[in-house]
Image (cartoon, rainbow, N blue to C red; front, side):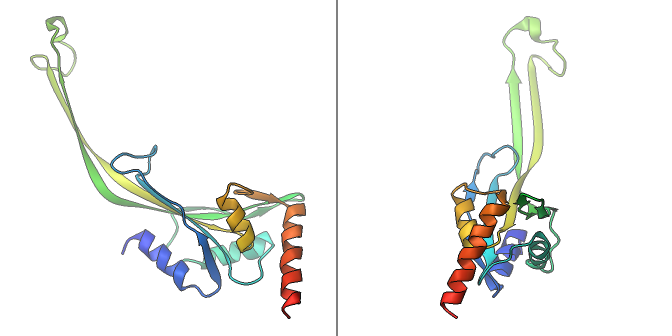
Length: 175
């Protein structure tokens, strides 16, 4: 099972979170810098919200069992803002064989390094790779806004308090 499949299944099967969006980019046959395929899961707690870096960090680290992330960015909290955490899962999904053939027509260049009778062949194999991100947000509204480019990586404490207040008011309205 690929890491992507493992991550998607773990998120879909988790009763405590919701997948708000999962933008996917397929750059094949090329690549965007390094990655040929990327998926960016935006997830949030299913009900209410989680509003401290410590609680969000613990939740994020429990999301994908049985698979160690390639790396991670931790949640961080300061006086005025919170920076969101994310998990990275990188994997090889294929190989690309590259062959370059250079044929010189200027005989003065035939003695250039690596050329034989004005011809040089360079062959190499490159990995085709995928990156899957899992970005956890305090609630589904913040995750949806991040999909639109708002508060994608961090949020001010004052704005976080507004979201927290909205969720609390909605919860009380249905209590």
